[in-house]
Length: 505
Image (cartoon, rainbow, N blue to C red; front, side):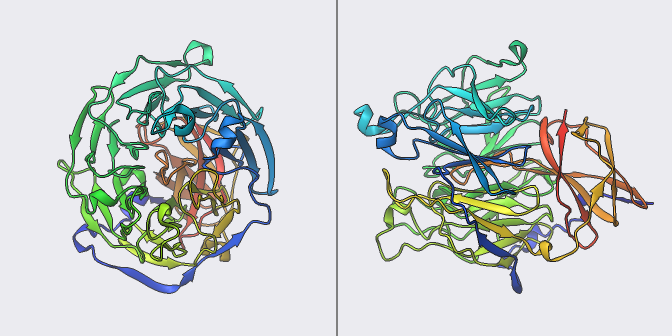
């Protein structure tokens, strides 16, 4: 009988952080999809039907906004086909999260462009809708108390969502937040009264739900200048405690921020970034790591990426590495100057050794308004990219990264019921055709502007007897907020299965 936990297998090396790179033949390969996206993919959300919701709204095009032309599409990555979705308002630069029942909450967005508002900045929308992947339609949710343009929406352990940050209906940095309860009013949902945050968050603050129920603001955001310190926010008591040590704090605008796998380790990594509004500042290649289990956590410098990157995406893979890809050498506003370059390099970060491994290079440049998501088969799809402002050329090609584990024989899981559910503190039983070292749940991504706050991989300690596997889910709801997850089994060679969708209730 074999009993293992992924959290026991890690090797902590926080005292040995240097420019460590694993040299090997570049891992994996990239393929450009034969069918480009029919909408500007400013937002991308994976749903439990295996499809990806691509949201453009007006797509950074003031003419489309003036015409009331708002678009979304649903992409089936298996059939490589698209369904056009009627879009009720301008969801451009909204926030979003996957609700416990699998619908996608979209909150805020664009009420007015600067030119149409007669002001100097965008105005935030107060509208909120849910997209239902079973009906392929948006359904209106309660209206927010104020507008939110560039807000973050993130799940809590109790099944509710926090909507925080962005610009309000007057184009002023938003200092309020609200909590949405999707189960209230017979499932119609309800919003709490808005509260003033303990401090100003920048637009699209990168927030990670921690095991104790607090949120960690990593210091990564969109349009941020580093003046808002990273720290721990208790949304219940509305208190904030800053943390120290973040390197290149003023150059984390549209860097990446990720809760490293497994989530039980409570480590966050930030990588890259720059200054969006500067046409002269170079992006950074630096990274930083923080262990939030410590009594007084502080950042330490991590191993740098192979190249400096702004607009970089980070995606957790089922083999417990993190893929970083995309980005540019500086702000996309500097696309006409000699120092501007697309970054085609990609790397895999190994959290157990704090090292980078070179991955195959991509072929499609990704800058502002781009994103990346893990698919249920273990591939990573990348979308979007603005070359310039206000209707300038937008990248419609979808490029997909196929990790090196596709070259191996992958474990096959079986014995699961249709539409399996899993309660906290309970076990889920299934079969595997080979010995496993890990079982895990990965939450579907909801990404925009290098920001994917709900992304997490949760370790499920396993007991295996022959082909029979029993995997246990921790009782703590803050590790796995309710909703749909991808269940992967990973064999002793580090090769993951294809995912099975499981609903945590």
